[in-house]
Image 1 (cartoon, chains in turn yellow, brown):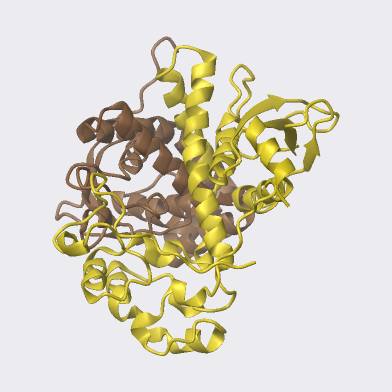
Image 2: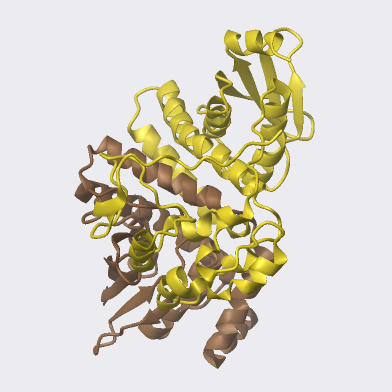
Length: 285
Length: 202
């Protein structure tokens, strides 16, 4: 099953975009897609460098930072949440909310990236040396395109200006519609993306119909947190819930520390789907 | 211990190149890594939460980010010294090299350019060609003039340098997110603090 690409509609003409930078949240999304061949938009972007130019490309993923740096940041996030809250559940709610917003973005990002035909438009993405080079890239940078057009089956658009990510996508990947598919998606690709490995297990609860569990024996991001008073894995719960919510599988996710023989930090993420999800599952197909 | 530090000082005194090789080696072989985009997204979520909490008062957000960074910095220096076992720097120039080639490299896997030294050699700039904090980021219209998105880095540097007896001011001069040509951080050495014994200890 395949779907045509639908570009986000633009209700506002990007006329005022020329003199301004940034996202105007009072107006809403404006078209600054990687495929915007419109000269005016391209020239605006040339000066500022659009976030879409490099970061959406599958090749962009792969960069790493040290776990230490992440742990420090995470620790500050937790203490920030702690200072702003009165109760433990409020802290967890805040962490959850942080994760939720990430989850919403992840679903879009991962699905988009997996839709790009592998190998095509490779040359489009390359880390540029300096700021000057970056600015040049946005306009003329597509000049290195011919190799990309040759490599890709889909991205066969000849002119350098049109070389962009969307030209290397023929069909968007189908979204997961069944409950098990979407759970597999979380268990596999999402975990792989976040922690460089799939989660350790995906289990269905034997007691309740709507309950599933994702198990992580060695949670990466909370490994330096010794306190068990606050369950910091609620951040990951938020991510899971964000992904599932946006995929139209409303649910609540909670984290429970369930140590086992060898894994004393083992965490079980319990996913409880809303009743409507089960009803829909039973209806279709 | 002495052999170790002699070895290091030989390598760092030798040339700039060896400091780079030294940090590359630490990054490649001795550092646990995590997806940089998770880092980016987490930071983004922190900043946006702060903007909401402070009702879009970006001056407060800036100073809060810097304070968060300071908290990180005072701890991070410990981690840094444990990993690198680098000796005390002889000059502020050397400090700048260690910050850009070593510290940024082993934590964030980027190497900012050092430049724009003041004539008195107490102020320099770090040019961040890549900034793992700010991928995916577009600043909203109302924040573009006021918010220093990556301000946490200033706090980190200030905190870390303070722990090695260097009282510094660190601030952002420009940021590509604001539409500037490059992202430039300025580090100014105020004074070298005297080593003091904490109160209550003999």
